[in-house]
Length: 456
Ligand code: HEM
Image (cartoon, rainbow, N blue to C red; front, side):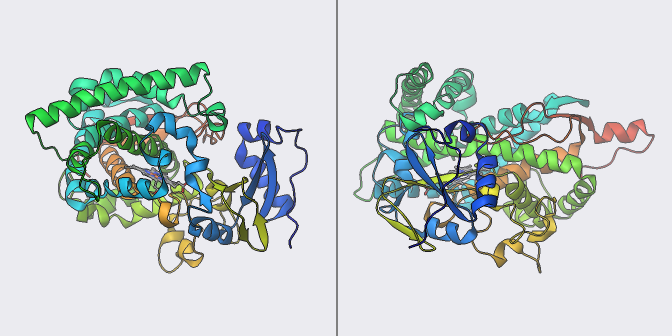
């Protein structure tokens, strides 16, 4: 049997919790350079096995739920999403519930969302005026909350709940912390606020659902799909399950999308040539606003820039599973009760998988290089296997629409130096200030005496 190296320097019981909390990626990188692809360390009394190679990912993502459990690893989400949904229920029921979201992600629904997304981006762009400065992450957060509210909850989001919801959402987010990870029910101040906010969200949602049922309103949004959904046995979803599934999609998708949109903006601001290429590509493909799905799919260069953003700055830097029964990978057996961990942030920068991994190089995803395809399970910013992200197409569509429409109107430049990732947060955005200066493109052209150009 292979002996697994143990990361040195941990404290009794706490292990490496303090350094891990501060910067998990640095700790994992250090472990990998010292010990190779598999090693272990302790976090608050629990042994964690880091599997830091595409081969390790493959085993991790292909393991059945009763061996590597996402449910047990992500129990901290239960007080936020609710008792009757997602990681609170059996993997079979969670699977059935997530499948009920599939009609909300079909092409016809996604085409409607393209309209809502474009409307929100245009409204946001209007507010910006002709020139100014913005903090990119808060701006992308505002925009993606508005888009998620419209696509998930519907027009009522803006008219009835949006002002109060922003505060509740922040309190729910406050429930994602180390204490909640170790003991989701611990009555810390943040957790008590989280629970109060969850009760209020449930009440708000119940009145929206009751109103839709009373008026028999049918809307093209996630809420409409879930009200119409039926379990295999024919029963409808309770209001609390509907609320829970909406919160699951919101928490899985909103902040992650905001962060990815921010990183893409930062990378593009640093690569003006890339911006020219994207504008040309969009001018050739996009014939209308909102864009047709077929046109968005033609934006191959933008797709490669998105993948490169996912590679360099994955919003979720580590994914976990609780080992339920012994699990063997590469001759190493992980015992029951330990945690298995993979890290997109570490493996996406391996020289043996990606050429010059520190370089922004969207071409690596184009034929004939296709570096991610050459090694399966090497690009895992959206996970892999049966738990692969359900909202990938939604996230890509949203970020494509945001940047296509914004680049069409504005030139951007980064004011602050290239920000570093803030690995101390759960969803990893830039650390500190990330300001961009923008200027309307037609304004620039008229300033320079040239005729205002057509859009794109
Ligand atoms: C840039 C944006 C996003 C990123 C980076 C992202 C990333 C991920 C990752 C890494 C996983 C796998 C977690 C694991 O295996 O432990 C995942 C799962 C999931 N994502 Fe996303 N996601 C994004 C957007 C979205 C959106 C927009 C939605 C919903 C509309 C969504 C819904 C989900 C759900 C429901 C799962 C659980 C799937 C399952 O366990 O079967 N995500 N996401």
